[in-house]
Length: 270
Image 1 (cartoon, rainbow, N blue to C red):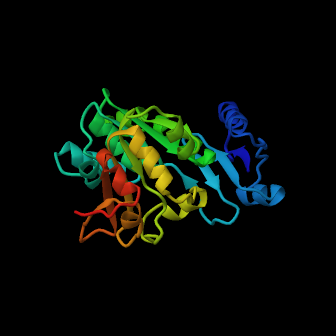
Image 2 (image 1 turned 135 degrees about the vertical axis):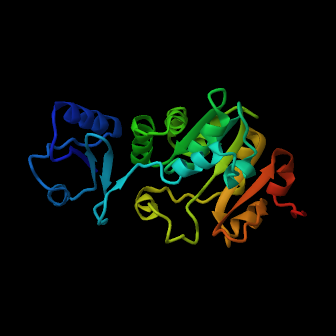
Image 3 (image 1 turned 60 degrees about the vertical axis):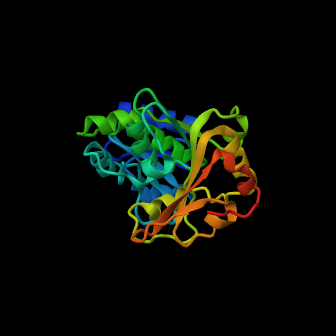
């Protein structure tokens, strides 16, 4: 991958692009009035463009750029402010002052909702396995200008870690966070989801294992939560209690910390 600037650039934008290239350990290339397509062709590479207000990732085989945006988090926070229920918050049982470890951060929509509910006294940490996506989301969370103060504050409170959730989990002490959350790429894609096509270009395709679930149960104080397609076999294979939502294409599954035997393969009897 190469890093360059928007077509209309200045010294500040170029300095920001050079810092991005250094942090991501990839070459910085001067734009020199070339189109993004020309840059991709000249260097046979994906391209990260640093613009005034956002970062744009152009995959070599994608027609449109991928960029960070709050996605559904904006209207979710507005609903929460009105006292309405949010399926993820309900499934996770999050309350003010609690802590969440989001092992598959992605665009951070669930983490933003969690950060709003948990508040300044709590802590949300998100792990993203793709370093480019982690960099884009980290900067997007801190730089996005929102007219909704509560949304902006919730975004800025999220701590982003670039790395493998398996390694991060293994490094954490026992019972060090209240809730551990997994939202892997669905085995059956929901094609109508906005932004998913771009996200899939950067998403890490790791499969959840029993070993990871056991590690998550060690780290969690209360429960672990899984989000997946309603037809996914992960719920039953890994021992989660699937919460049926008849009108939704995705469901949540929960597992309490005391259910280690279930995760190890004992039949789950609800």
